[in-house]
Image (cartoon, rainbow, N blue to C red):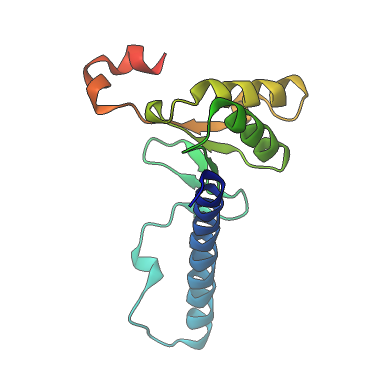
Length: 143
């Protein structure tokens, strides 16, 4: 598989996960109206999802968008374009990592979207991962 196919596959899997969650959430409402029991009781799970705002509340209290753009396997140029267009089409979560080597592209795409008034920095949630070899220098690694 080429990089583009993998990126599309990742996005499709994310969307599929959200759709499945929505289906189970609707099933819960249907079951409560019919007073039927089920093997799966969704109310047993801690539901921090808000589908009106399309966010999930993290343990830290921050709200993170449910759907986001993953940048794995993209070079800086592809990442800059992907991030810019994702933000243009309403995405507010961008995922990257040191290992991907495309964090500059994330910054370039974000800067372009901010410069064009599409988003503010405060509207965008960016997740990243540091390499295990950088754990001892996590703070400097993030900068």
